[in-house]
Length: 168
View 1: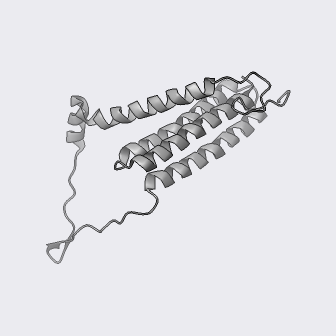
View 2: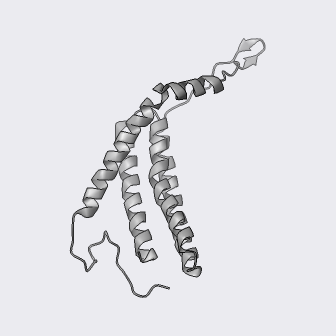
View 3: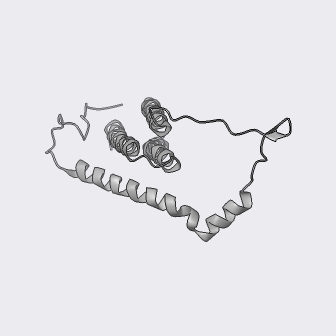
């Protein structure tokens, strides 16, 4: 299916002239990620969203034991924040999905548009899942920076992998 071996667009083995286009793309991705986090934080202030939340808001009745309310369990903080661990698992799943998509694409060359859509979903989810996890978590600047930098790097590598294997 592949006619010749092609190095990754992001590697130094590429025979093409080196440019800083990848670095500019990374800066653009980081800018979009940081601004979308601010948008997600302010999302609840939009009147339509506020009315939808109020409509579906349910307060659970307190748990009772022998006629007295039971206090909620104490949740301790772990050494590794949960968004960092879940993001790592999500990125590993994205890598596995990317490999599976490329293997299936090699067997079915007539369905290129379908596999381009799957490649786009894998690349999008490699950035969207960590962003959603960081947005839902309490603010932890160091772990969020590590998570989002890893997600941006993984997204760029998966995009390069898709371009290399799809022979675009």
